[in-house]
Length: 240
Image (cartoon, rainbow, N blue to C red; front, side, top):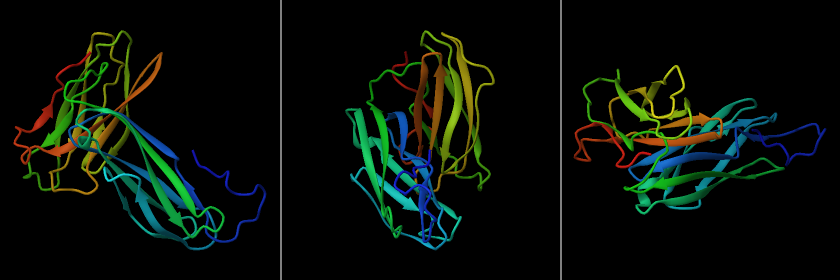
Protein backbone atom coordinates (compact mmCIF):
# COMPACT_ATOMS: atom_id res chain seq x y z
CA UNK A 1 0.00 0.00 0.00
CA UNK A 2 1.49 3.30 -1.01
CA UNK A 3 1.28 6.19 1.37
CA UNK A 4 0.48 9.48 -0.36
CA UNK A 5 -1.47 11.16 2.46
CA UNK A 6 1.38 13.57 3.14
CA UNK A 7 0.88 15.33 -0.20
CA UNK A 8 -1.82 17.94 -0.94
CA UNK A 9 -4.55 16.50 -3.23
CA UNK A 10 -4.68 17.83 -6.77
CA UNK A 11 -1.30 19.55 -6.54
CA UNK A 12 0.93 19.60 -9.63
CA UNK A 13 4.08 17.99 -8.35
CA UNK A 14 7.50 19.55 -8.88
CA UNK A 15 10.63 18.02 -7.45
CA UNK A 16 11.43 14.62 -5.94
CA UNK A 17 8.61 12.61 -4.36
CA UNK A 18 9.05 9.45 -2.26
CA UNK A 19 6.56 6.58 -2.41
CA UNK A 20 6.98 3.24 -0.61
CA UNK A 21 5.55 -0.20 -1.29
CA UNK A 22 4.26 -0.53 2.29
CA UNK A 23 4.71 1.27 5.60
CA UNK A 24 5.12 -1.90 7.68
CA UNK A 25 6.03 -5.55 7.33
CA UNK A 26 5.08 -8.46 9.56
CA UNK A 27 7.47 -11.43 9.76
CA UNK A 28 5.07 -13.39 11.91
CA UNK A 29 6.67 -16.26 13.85
CA UNK A 30 10.48 -16.04 13.67
CA UNK A 31 12.65 -18.58 15.51
CA UNK A 32 15.52 -17.25 17.62
CA UNK A 33 17.94 -19.13 15.40
CA UNK A 34 19.22 -16.48 13.00
CA UNK A 35 18.04 -13.36 11.16
CA UNK A 36 15.13 -12.61 8.83
CA UNK A 37 14.95 -9.92 6.16
CA UNK A 38 12.41 -7.91 4.19
CA UNK A 39 12.96 -5.51 1.29
CA UNK A 40 10.89 -2.31 1.14
CA UNK A 41 10.54 -0.88 -2.38
CA UNK A 42 11.08 2.90 -2.67
CA UNK A 43 10.07 4.81 -5.80
CA UNK A 44 10.69 8.37 -6.96
CA UNK A 45 7.24 9.48 -8.13
CA UNK A 46 8.38 13.08 -8.70
CA UNK A 47 10.00 14.82 -11.65
CA UNK A 48 13.47 15.49 -10.21
CA UNK A 49 16.30 13.42 -8.75
CA UNK A 50 15.48 11.94 -5.31
CA UNK A 51 18.32 11.50 -2.84
CA UNK A 52 18.14 9.07 0.09
CA UNK A 53 20.16 10.93 2.70
CA UNK A 54 20.16 8.38 5.52
CA UNK A 55 18.52 5.19 6.77
CA UNK A 56 18.63 4.33 10.47
CA UNK A 57 17.09 1.66 12.70
CA UNK A 58 15.70 2.12 16.21
CA UNK A 59 17.64 -0.81 17.65
CA UNK A 60 20.99 -2.52 17.21
CA UNK A 61 19.20 -5.80 16.50
CA UNK A 62 18.01 -4.34 13.18
CA UNK A 63 20.27 -3.48 10.26
CA UNK A 64 19.55 -1.95 6.85
CA UNK A 65 21.03 -1.98 3.36
CA UNK A 66 20.18 0.51 0.61
CA UNK A 67 20.63 -0.61 -2.99
CA UNK A 68 20.76 2.86 -4.55
CA UNK A 69 20.77 6.24 -2.80
CA UNK A 70 19.87 8.36 -5.84
CA UNK A 71 16.73 7.78 -7.90
CA UNK A 72 15.81 9.42 -11.18
CA UNK A 73 12.11 10.13 -11.79
CA UNK A 74 10.28 6.81 -12.05
CA UNK A 75 13.18 4.77 -10.70
CA UNK A 76 12.88 2.40 -7.74
CA UNK A 77 15.28 0.86 -5.26
CA UNK A 78 15.16 -1.43 -2.25
CA UNK A 79 15.90 -0.95 1.43
CA UNK A 80 16.41 -4.34 3.03
CA UNK A 81 15.73 -4.47 6.76
CA UNK A 82 17.20 -7.39 8.70
CA UNK A 83 15.93 -8.35 12.14
CA UNK A 84 18.25 -10.49 14.27
CA UNK A 85 15.79 -12.70 16.12
CA UNK A 86 18.70 -14.58 17.72
CA UNK A 87 19.24 -11.49 19.91
CA UNK A 88 16.11 -12.46 21.88
CA UNK A 89 16.69 -15.99 23.24
CA UNK A 90 13.68 -15.76 25.56
CA UNK A 91 11.30 -14.94 22.73
CA UNK A 92 8.52 -12.35 22.72
CA UNK A 93 6.81 -9.80 20.49
CA UNK A 94 8.99 -7.02 18.99
CA UNK A 95 8.35 -4.06 16.69
CA UNK A 96 11.23 -2.00 15.28
CA UNK A 97 11.30 1.30 13.39
CA UNK A 98 13.39 2.35 10.41
CA UNK A 99 13.72 6.07 9.62
CA UNK A 100 14.34 7.07 6.01
CA UNK A 101 15.45 10.66 5.32
CA UNK A 102 15.30 12.02 1.77
CA UNK A 103 15.32 15.41 0.02
CA UNK A 104 11.57 15.17 -0.62
CA UNK A 105 10.57 18.74 0.26
CA UNK A 106 7.05 17.87 1.47
CA UNK A 107 7.71 14.66 3.43
CA UNK A 108 11.48 14.31 3.98
CA UNK A 109 11.15 11.76 6.79
CA UNK A 110 9.47 8.36 6.41
CA UNK A 111 9.00 5.82 9.22
CA UNK A 112 8.87 2.13 8.29
CA UNK A 113 8.18 -0.64 10.81
CA UNK A 114 8.90 -4.35 11.01
CA UNK A 115 7.35 -6.73 13.53
CA UNK A 116 8.04 -10.31 14.64
CA UNK A 117 7.02 -12.78 17.30
CA UNK A 118 10.25 -14.46 18.30
CA UNK A 119 9.91 -18.14 19.22
CA UNK A 120 12.24 -19.38 21.94
CA UNK A 121 13.98 -22.77 21.78
CA UNK A 122 11.01 -24.43 23.43
CA UNK A 123 8.01 -23.15 21.53
CA UNK A 124 4.80 -24.09 19.79
CA UNK A 125 3.96 -23.35 16.17
CA UNK A 126 0.52 -24.10 14.86
CA UNK A 127 0.82 -26.30 11.80
CA UNK A 128 4.00 -24.80 10.44
CA UNK A 129 7.63 -25.37 9.73
CA UNK A 130 11.22 -26.05 10.85
CA UNK A 131 13.28 -23.50 12.74
CA UNK A 132 16.03 -22.84 10.24
CA UNK A 133 17.42 -23.82 6.84
CA UNK A 134 21.09 -24.73 7.27
CA UNK A 135 23.38 -24.65 4.25
CA UNK A 136 26.72 -26.44 4.21
CA UNK A 137 27.31 -27.35 0.59
CA UNK A 138 29.60 -24.68 -0.85
CA UNK A 139 30.56 -26.76 -3.89
CA UNK A 140 27.51 -26.00 -6.04
CA UNK A 141 29.33 -23.07 -7.70
CA UNK A 142 26.31 -20.83 -7.71
CA UNK A 143 23.90 -23.44 -9.08
CA UNK A 144 22.19 -23.91 -5.73
CA UNK A 145 20.66 -27.03 -4.21
CA UNK A 146 17.11 -28.10 -3.35
CA UNK A 147 16.07 -28.79 0.21
CA UNK A 148 12.72 -30.00 1.53
CA UNK A 149 10.78 -28.54 4.45
CA UNK A 150 8.02 -30.74 5.83
CA UNK A 151 4.99 -28.93 7.21
CA UNK A 152 2.90 -30.80 9.75
CA UNK A 153 -0.54 -29.27 10.13
CA UNK A 154 -1.51 -29.95 13.71
CA UNK A 155 -4.09 -27.17 13.79
CA UNK A 156 -7.81 -27.94 13.58
CA UNK A 157 -8.16 -26.18 10.22
CA UNK A 158 -7.06 -26.77 6.63
CA UNK A 159 -4.02 -24.61 5.78
CA UNK A 160 -3.10 -23.22 2.36
CA UNK A 161 0.63 -22.46 2.02
CA UNK A 162 1.85 -19.55 -0.12
CA UNK A 163 5.15 -17.69 -0.46
CA UNK A 164 5.19 -14.08 0.72
CA UNK A 165 8.86 -13.25 0.25
CA UNK A 166 12.24 -14.84 -0.39
CA UNK A 167 15.42 -12.86 0.31
CA UNK A 168 19.08 -13.42 -0.52
CA UNK A 169 20.13 -16.98 -1.37
CA UNK A 170 16.55 -18.31 -1.47
CA UNK A 171 16.23 -18.54 -5.25
CA UNK A 172 13.09 -20.60 -5.80
CA UNK A 173 10.29 -22.06 -3.68
CA UNK A 174 7.69 -24.70 -4.58
CA UNK A 175 4.74 -25.05 -2.18
CA UNK A 176 2.10 -27.81 -2.01
CA UNK A 177 -0.42 -27.52 -4.83
CA UNK A 178 -3.28 -28.35 -2.47
CA UNK A 179 -4.16 -27.07 0.99
CA UNK A 180 -2.95 -29.25 3.86
CA UNK A 181 -5.84 -30.75 5.85
CA UNK A 182 -5.89 -30.87 9.65
CA UNK A 183 -3.50 -33.57 10.79
CA UNK A 184 -1.88 -33.80 7.36
CA UNK A 185 1.58 -33.08 6.02
CA UNK A 186 2.91 -31.12 3.08
CA UNK A 187 6.33 -30.45 1.58
CA UNK A 188 7.85 -27.12 0.60
CA UNK A 189 10.84 -27.40 -1.74
CA UNK A 190 13.38 -24.61 -1.41
CA UNK A 191 16.30 -23.92 -3.76
CA UNK A 192 19.12 -22.25 -1.85
CA UNK A 193 22.44 -21.09 -3.29
CA UNK A 194 25.80 -22.02 -1.76
CA UNK A 195 26.47 -20.12 1.46
CA UNK A 196 28.91 -17.24 1.05
CA UNK A 197 28.23 -14.96 4.02
CA UNK A 198 25.64 -12.88 2.20
CA UNK A 199 24.40 -9.51 3.33
CA UNK A 200 21.58 -9.08 3.96
CA UNK A 201 21.00 -12.53 5.48
CA UNK A 202 18.73 -14.86 3.56
CA UNK A 203 15.26 -15.87 4.72
CA UNK A 204 11.93 -17.24 3.54
CA UNK A 205 8.53 -15.92 4.64
CA UNK A 206 5.48 -18.16 4.21
CA UNK A 207 1.79 -17.51 4.67
CA UNK A 208 -0.43 -20.22 6.13
CA UNK A 209 -4.04 -19.36 5.39
CA UNK A 210 -7.24 -20.85 6.77
CA UNK A 211 -10.87 -19.77 7.10
CA UNK A 212 -9.90 -17.98 10.32
CA UNK A 213 -7.27 -15.82 8.62
CA UNK A 214 -3.56 -15.99 7.93
CA UNK A 215 -0.47 -16.81 9.93
CA UNK A 216 3.04 -15.87 8.85
CA UNK A 217 6.26 -17.75 9.44
CA UNK A 218 9.73 -16.42 8.56
CA UNK A 219 12.57 -18.95 8.40
CA UNK A 220 16.23 -17.84 8.43
CA UNK A 221 18.97 -19.37 6.31
CA UNK A 222 22.18 -20.03 8.27
CA UNK A 223 25.62 -21.48 7.68
CA UNK A 224 25.27 -24.95 9.15
CA UNK A 225 29.00 -25.63 8.81
CA UNK A 226 29.96 -22.73 11.04
CA UNK A 227 27.17 -23.61 13.45
CA UNK A 228 28.61 -27.10 13.84
CA UNK A 229 25.44 -28.71 12.53
CA UNK A 230 24.99 -31.41 9.94
CA UNK A 231 23.31 -29.10 7.46
CA UNK A 232 19.81 -29.35 5.98
CA UNK A 233 16.59 -28.63 7.85
CA UNK A 234 16.63 -28.15 11.60
CA UNK A 235 13.23 -29.24 13.00
CA UNK A 236 11.34 -27.57 15.81
CA UNK A 237 11.21 -29.19 19.23
CA UNK A 238 7.48 -28.69 19.66
CA UNK A 239 4.95 -28.47 16.84
CA UNK A 240 1.23 -28.29 17.51
